[in-house]
Length: 98
Image 1 (cartoon, rainbow, N blue to C red):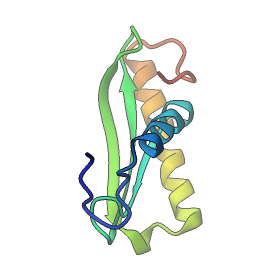
Image 2 (image 1 turned 90 degrees about the vertical axis):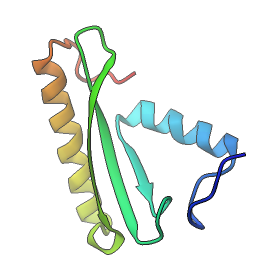
Image 3 (image 1 turned 30 degrees about the vertical axis):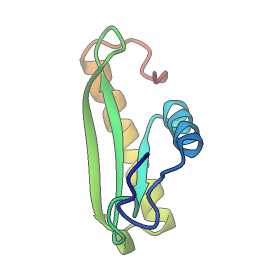
Image 4 (image 1 turned 180 degrees about the horizontal axis):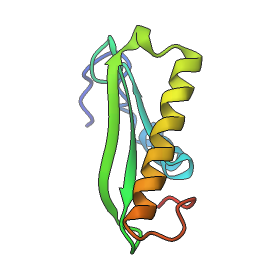
């Protein structure tokens, strides 16, 4: 069983699978109060030349600091930074995740 850390933690395996599919498709992960009721976080992967995960970039903070527009801006900055770092590491197709 998946442990719940807050009322928003994904504990249903099917929901988790759907979230992982969304992450692969979009290129970023987000946690909206899933670990702590007042913290949101976002992350992207950096890939090596072979397309394998090399590192990650993340940002987290109080949930009230990430309303709609700010959340989109943070995600955009993270995705663009990870694409640039992946490109610098030799990955050719930086628009493809996973």
